[in-house]
Length: 261
Image (cartoon, rainbow, N blue to C red):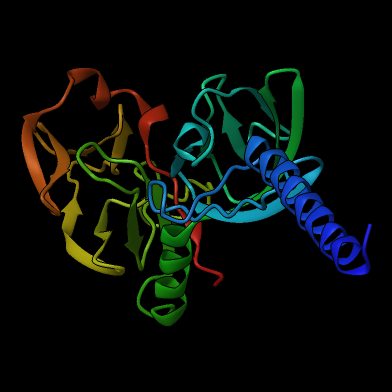
């Protein structure tokens, strides 16, 4: 074989090796590739190409959910998943991840494709933006609102903030804190909307009673009726008379905390 022919033979062999090698790497990467370049229910998930023992981090809001099936590359793949702490982050057998309360947890995912199993660890930090906004509001209005509580109310997307400057004990009105009841017969209702805390209106009780709460609904006990309140379109709505047992059921009183923010 002549010199020139040997040279071209070596070049061709080199190119063939490169093509085969690249083909193998490409096939291997695509089999183990899960990508996501867009938001999933307002949650950004970013996953590397090679999943084996891969760990990545993400953050989500309390109550927010993400579906692992929405990740690119998951089509046709089977997987199992679990959470290191279901009280902070829950995960269903169908791959629905949900932020339960503020804190950190790890979601362990085994992605199965053919005979291959790829392991992924998702470090999830759950934050509570609404709670943080309320705390900041209370901090800024400490002189105006000395006591507060946060409750879930029907019709409201987020829990509402109830704030007051004074407490009231229906059994000892002259000394509201003597018995440590920490309850209020009048307070202002605030909601989180438009990325800020907005005041709705005041709710007051009569007949030596305090605000009550049952089935995600606020109740104002008056002389001859019990008003029920829900929230609709960011407004507090009186939906009529509440159950009569609330006249006597003291366990339904709303307890307040001191504003120490």
